[in-house]
Length: 102
Image 1: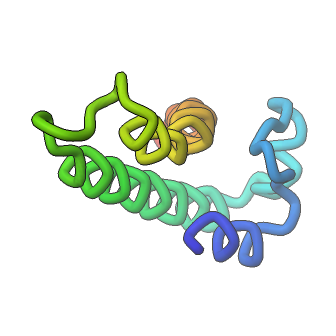
Image 2: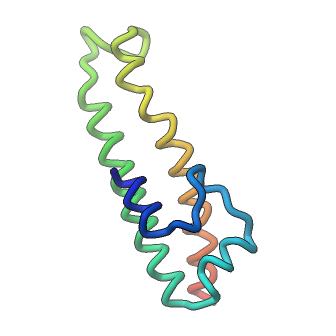
């Protein structure tokens, strides 16, 4: 739901979150307020990814389901897109923070 909300509020970001440096500048429109708002939304998105990760790892019971069982693998499967999204979000947050600092 968080991903859908993020893309609803930021329709210029593609689903895979991959934009070039120039596209990121176009999205931010070189306005510090837009960059600040984007960074807040990205940090909220990353917080929700971390909450999901905590819930998933909390649901694993080492005596019955772990990463080596099919049940454990099914529980861990949602983490793959979360890792991909969080990597992109972290990269953009760093770039935006440099712009905000400048």
